[in-house]
Image (tube, rainbow over all chains, first blue to last red; front, side, top):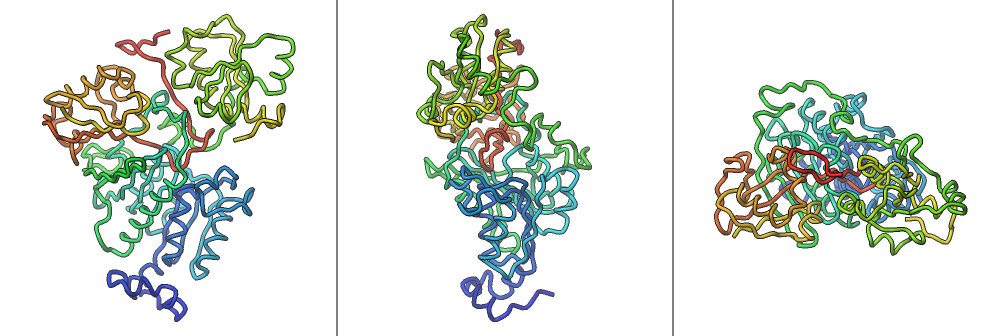
Length: 383
Length: 113
């Protein structure tokens, strides 16, 4: 039995009721449906806003982060007034303001093999707005095991991908990507960054697909992958087939329960100590500041050239991380060296690379130039 | 000549080019042409045994070469080839996204030091 709509709801959803493909019955279907959104970041923001506005009866939000000012360039569900608040609470407040008739359930916890099935089992559809491989494989496997559609999207700089992975009717994420890139081969995330509006474009397409699936209208992107590029303003579609050898949804599937996804991907999915190269290989900004007074240290900046326009340390040599392996001959392993980047993560990888190439006298600047800007030279901006 | 579309994450290895013209009568020849024009892209799409890496998908028009004849899939002038990588992002957050890179490898995967 679908719920009846109140007069207020009929007025609120009037523009939906006028579309024959939605109509009163469709709106009642939406009122009766539920969607779980993994992540309330760049993709999760437009997804949650539009699904709430559309009148999905129950929305679940999973995130464990807090709102930071650097999120606001793209995560439009949050605001300046919610900086420092839990993302799920900031998002819930916005959604309840947008549409008080719906129910918003929040899960302020990392989405893991321990809690994912419990969280996802009572929702009709799952929307993947995560930012890392372990959680993507987890989200896929949960959707396959629970026979739920998984509306997938992923973004990088100007590129976006969208598909609906629904193993009951088509391929799953693992059919296309049986395994993640091994650590050591993800193509240069080092430069990072994303055009703020890109998750808006892609997340809105995700929300569109979710509404189509829930309403049972149109042709959802099941068995199709949309590839978007903002610079070319190109939309390309490719066909995806079920992989007969798929380890989770194929006829001979051997993965029958959730696994350790961090181990599977060889990378962490959740925050570990940020910007550290590990015991004995770090130097703090205060230690560096002291040491520079008495010692000649070589400073190696592995950020991208355009980041140097934001902040730089005097006399530092710049070799972007992606070029480091090819430009080792420019460095002398006899030098005492400190390697740094924005916040210490890229430089930690750079240190690993240098160590494997025989450089023994290198330390990683913990927290990167941003820590230096906070603790040593407050004239530098933090970015 | 066939046009091969390069996704953003792989463009650093094609001098920033979004499309590369490649020649060959099948996928294998086209990729050999690609890697001879841009040797730095090779470790990102091939493994040490010169096989396509499992997380790299190559499409001819709308179809994955895995659903056709793999690297033996014939191609013709005017076909549109697309490399599709797996990308993790939902939003880029330094510290959460592990940054990876590798040393250039000699044939056989031995590190050049």
